Image (cartoon, rainbow, N blue to C red; front, side, top):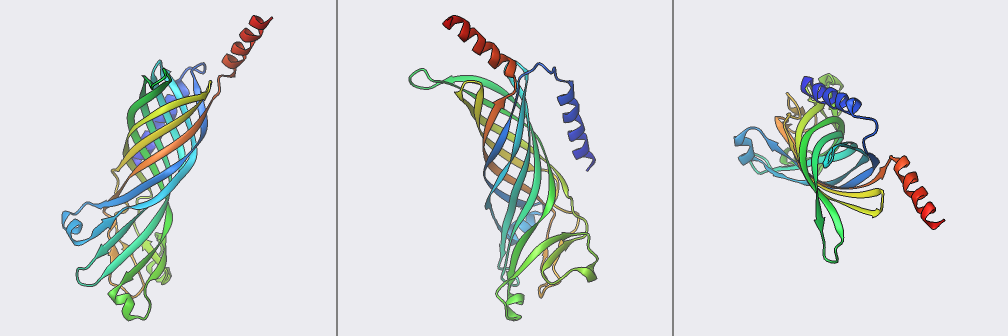
Length: 265
């Protein structure tokens, strides 16, 4: 949690310190993503098969030109991540869950010019930076041999945090010590298109590698199963984002229009 606060504080200080005359672009962003979790314990990696989950993210993005080709970009995103865990050890098990997060990737990028056939220009960029994520909750289903013996194929459940055990219902998985604020690292690459002059279409490919564990304790099910969800694991994923960025330097637009009008006169 201290690391997350430090990252956010440094970013906010950087945003405030920039010259108000620098280029600022803002706009909506959304796209698909594939996410998965990875156990910290090597033995668990061999006991359980973990598969990725295909979902999406959406929100808003702000990009500041720091110096010439260098940009600082941050976004506030509603993000759906998750995992599918299967095991045939002891009893057949399948745990499918989708988590809800608020993500704030903080990206430092450098832009370069490129050309396509027909002399059509574009820009591409490379970069990286930290990712701060807040865990809102989630929903899933769990199936196992023990559950099948009770007469149902699977049990749907909701992720809850820090509930006393006697207050957890049969359709909840409770985490006594969750890491709701999580830190990760991003590596990004993308292209920038300018179909409308000042505005931009930003297409970004982002690889996110989690650093923080999902929790310091396992997820407990009061349902008819001995399985506990091991949360000494990290979220990771691949994101494809498309953003429509509006240049807020309206004075430059007006200057361009007045110049055109003078030429016509």
